[in-house]
Each structure stands twice: as structure tokens, then as C-alpha cells.
Picture 1 (cartoon, rainbow, N blue to C red):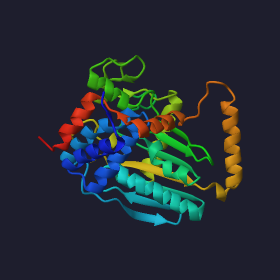
Picture 2 (tube, rainbow, N blue to C red):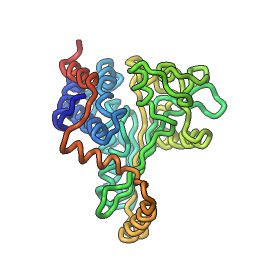
Picture 3 (cartoon, rainbow, N blue to C red):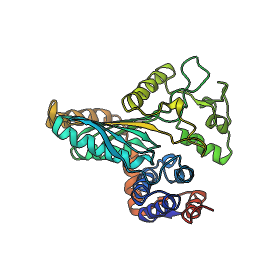
Picture 4 (cartoon, rainbow, N blue to C red):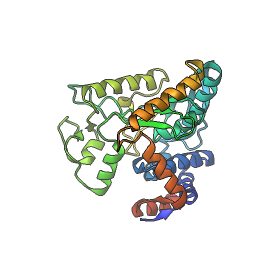
Length: 337
């Protein structure tokens, strides 16, 4: 398994995206966030996604020349149209807008419409924590969860993330999809031709399956927490789509094929300034009091700690990339066959 410096891996991923039609800003921003996911040990949201993105760029499921722009706004909120480009530029812009508006209004909301997959939401929220604020992020995705009692997937995996800035320590990062496992994990099993464990998903007829491919094509993942997780997926769907005008998950053709129109996904980002509420001093004190209580038990770790540790190691030693993924990146960087 090759170990590559962050800069080298980022340049290679960006070159692959550019070779398949992404503008330089889109390619560089996308590569930055994908490599950041690998750096933090989130390989399912890392450079393994480049091949899928290149496929979408090649057939215009993602528009490589798109430039995100604000299309509607009020003082504390705005809507950004991603123009059906890859999602990271628009989402990065949305986070910056949410933070800037929170500084003046106490809270900022930025929605993104006509977007694409946007990777690990917790990474996108890092600037919120750096600003000493609280951040929330939501995204929908192509349908993956069946309503309770249904036989057709309606809601996406619909990830949710939250970040809580701390004064002299890395932030607390909560980042999860609303399914028992991520679709990226299913993709890894499908790529390796391995059967998935029981309880991960169902086929297109709503029957339990161990075939990863049957889940990816017309099937469904089990929601985390059963009915409760399904209801949360519904709430995220509305936050991301009803407020932004984006496509609902069941209107989106599978993300795992090059066939179909642009995804038109929706994302929402919220930044909250503690100074507008109990005040920053009280906020930091309450956070650290809770952290101390959590860590009083031996063996407990805070959400995000593993990410921070892996990132520190990768900065010094480089990033582990699978042989197959690295060879694929090299091939993709040479352009379409």
C-alpha cells in the first residue's frame, strides 16, 4: 500500500478531475477535501471517489465549468446555486457565508441547491470551529432508506454533522449518516466482490440481502435506530430540499452510475455564534465541563479525536492509499481513454 505526501496525492487527484472536465478551482477544491477525508481515516469519502466524479464529469452529470453563486439572500441566510458542478466549491462558499453572517447576525444559514456529492460534512465544518462557533451541516443523497413499512427507497443516507469549537483543543466533531453503514462502505464491498454482513441492507424488493451490488442498484440501507432514524432522514430531506429547491432523494438517479441527469442535491449549513447567546466564555466553560465529565471514565474518547490524531500522523508521514485506488488515479490523470 503506497504512502504518499498530502501535496502529491492532492495534485494527482486534481489532475484526474481536470483531465475529465473540471475547472482548475473545482478540481483543486474537490481534491483538497477528498484527500482530507483520507488524511482523517475516512477512506470511503476520500480519493476512491475520484473515479466516480470523473465519470459524472465526462457525461455532464456534473458540470465542470460551473461556478457557484448566491441567488437569494437576507441578512442571516442565503441560497447558493452550485450550477450542477461538483459540490465542494459551493459547500465551502456556504460555510464561509454562514460564518460571516453569524458574526453580524448571531446565526447564519446557507443553503446549497443543484449540487453534487459533498463528502464528509464534518470536514467542511472545520472553519466554523476555527471561528469559535457551533456548526451544523446536512445533505441529502440519492435514495437509500425506505419509509417504515415501505418497499421503495425514498430518503437518502442524509448525513448530519455538528462541530463544537473549543478554546485550546481540537473541536468536537459529530459526523454520521442516518443508515447503519455508509453507502461508501457498501461500495467498498461491491468493489472487492465481498458479501456484506447481515442487517446492512435490502434489495429492490425490500428483502434482506448480502449482495452489495443489489443494494447499490435499486436497493435500500437500513436506517440507524429503525423508525427513529427514518424520521430523522425525513427531517434532513426537508431541511436540504424544501428550503433550497433541490431534488428530493427519490428524484435523483443513483449516484453510482454515469447514466441520468445531474444529481441536483441539496445541502444546508448553519453557524451559531455563542456570543449572541450565553456568551463565549460561558460556552467554552460549559463545553469543557462536559468534556471533563465524559473523559473521567478510562477508555472514553471524544468524537473527532481519532480524526485529529490520524491527521497529525498523516501530516508527518503521508497518506495510505490502496494500490488499486492509486493506480486508478494515475490512469485517470492521463485523461479519458
